[in-house]
Length: 231
Image (cartoon, rainbow, N blue to C red; front, side):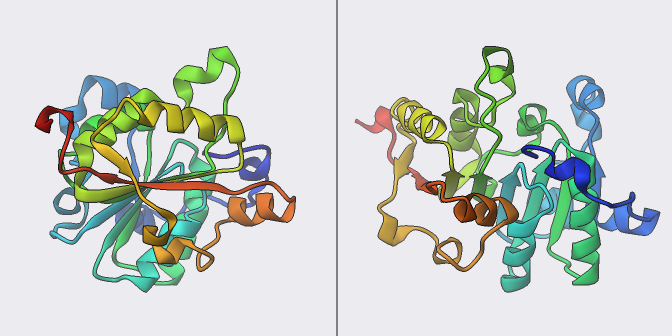
């Protein structure tokens, strides 16, 4: 999800039809709400026609993270999801330039897209530098929310992971509090975090906030095979 005026400043045009067909799925909210059955499952079989492990980046903007990961790991599939069109157009340009076959993008509201994700279908999910949306009237639009953790308990495969990054201490503290109510998700110690995300791959927002001296707060959690019901 874009923050500030960055997405609006992008000088980009809609991709040509052949690239849209290859890389970009547009899921209008009213259609996704009323006719979800008309859209494919958000899964490797549904979007790529194979069974490779799938990673999903919520609020991917121009796709920095998933494009780098897709290029480095052709044996995995990557999906970037964002509600704003222009950053996704840039992401499609970059995917086509690199001729990546294991990445695609979805323009949709994450709160509606959750229902398209089959249970236990995600190997990895990312929520990196989401817009904080701290005003009360904005809170129902936030990615960091109880519904995110409820859906991750459902959608992550056994030992699948959710990676959180933010420059907002209040938002990070809220995520940690929410996590206490979701025993299906277990925080991992830093030495077990994904090495590709530790200094190797830094998105636009990572570099932007780091350069301004903001703290980069990070946590990875794993889908726990043992839940509260196991005692």
